[in-house]
Length: 459
Image 1: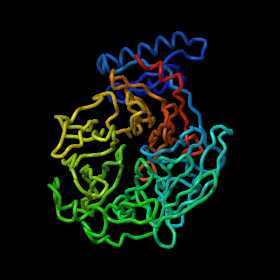
Image 2: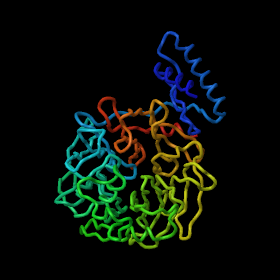
Image 3: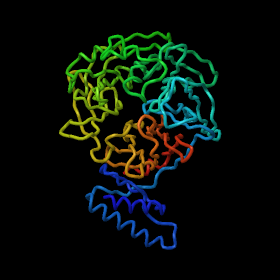
Image 4: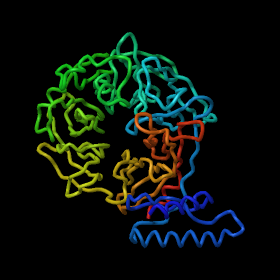
């Protein structure tokens, strides 16, 4: 296989012009076709011969020719590195004109308590102009400062910050510049924009750097499952908050897979359901050797009616499909030993489980549904020696995958400060925005336009 990938590298260097999409998860996902060379025809024939040979090695379903990639462009310019972070928040305003982003002047190290980022938005109708909105000292590389548009509002955004020795959340009207601050950070916001769930970012920083915030030490660092740390419900109108679920409570609930002395429990990755009736949280625990296991739980907005949806210790990226179903990555389900995508029903006592996109939809991508529910949007981690990341769409009715582009990421982007693409769609499904390096400029926002292109991909 290494020799085939080396040959692929030569073909890519020659700038071949057709996309080949991997439908097996093997990593053969590149571009081949006519070369801009006097002997281009002969080289094109050679490209197709290579495809035939690779197909013979990997099986008849391994390689499938796809249409050209959709149009894309970098929309952040000037000095600084720009990104947005996670895939489960509103980055676009309802009109598709403004795209939220964060800016920082360094990469390739952990944030410190003194590192401040800039908050802004890109005006797509004014030459991708950057509009400054604020700053934050409560952020990480993977999820930023929870920057997002407030659901139900055309003009308000919110983000986390650190002020006077505590984590807070700012709500800003981007047009009037009226701002108010509530004395608690937020994680996931309800669909009506009136409340949010949050968790202990100091605890996360202690056990999972890259997802918590620097600047405030965890007061429960010596406790394995503290009762005074957990999930908060935050009232975005009054600014009040109360704990609705403790780490100690969930650590004592049900069976903990592979229990050992010294495992340290915490919550991460909260997401309110589309109707606001429940929320997801990942209950995680870290072993003394640094490894982790995870249960996926759901609860109602009061922290009651708790359901352990994925109890076996293997749960990763997820998204709500609708108020009753969750698309989640797990393993050791339905006879699948490796990681795969499953649609699980969130019901008391457990519901149905169904495998989704086996061998086609990437088993480690960051998942969401485009509006209408016909397509799943996802991506890949770096693949092959070229370290190429590939955002893609999976068509549920046909099981077909179409790639949105190939975005190489350098060796320096590893671990805590890696730059996952985390694809985010606009509310009408026309645009996808990703984080990816732009040569020597480092991480920047890339805008992918699906208008007209996506309709040609549907059989």
